[in-house]
Length: 229
Image (cartoon, rainbow, N blue to C red; front, side, top):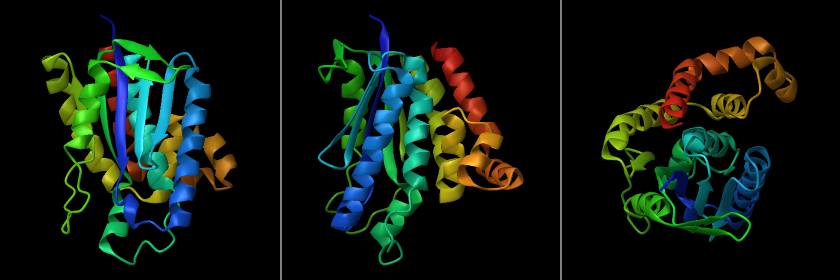
């Protein structure tokens, strides 16, 4: 069977957000999923938000899954939510990490974006991985990792799991502004277009890009796409 790409994710410290912040966050994520559907094609991508804090995505083209994971990660980290992030540890964890995401490359028994159907090995792999990271109800939360990779082929999984771990470490140190620049670059904008969009000097955009480690991110994404394609 042909491999597809899936992504399962959950928002970190979602229950600690205010009702207003939850609605803002949900609206922003829904908007991003709609934009990805438009960019990737409605026949090729399905993205949905379940119960406010769980993300499910499936892609017809498995090679696009890492870029999509990083788009989700950097976009959510770039959001100015919540306003009162310094009030407690859980809210600080949201600002630092934003979301846990597990990607999988494996077959799907059924994938119909228009009918909202995702079923098969790929979504089971990514879904179980996120379920195993659940920290709800725990008093002391230590987050060591937020990006995961699974594959039906053990060699592929072994090859790319360290890449996801390194990208995770890199992005955990990025500021919201740096994540915003990385997100826009992942969406295909160059530095000139980003500067115009954000009303910033191009040199400022370049500084954010360099500080975020864009060259390493771009190299990792291209390596993944070439290998999986």
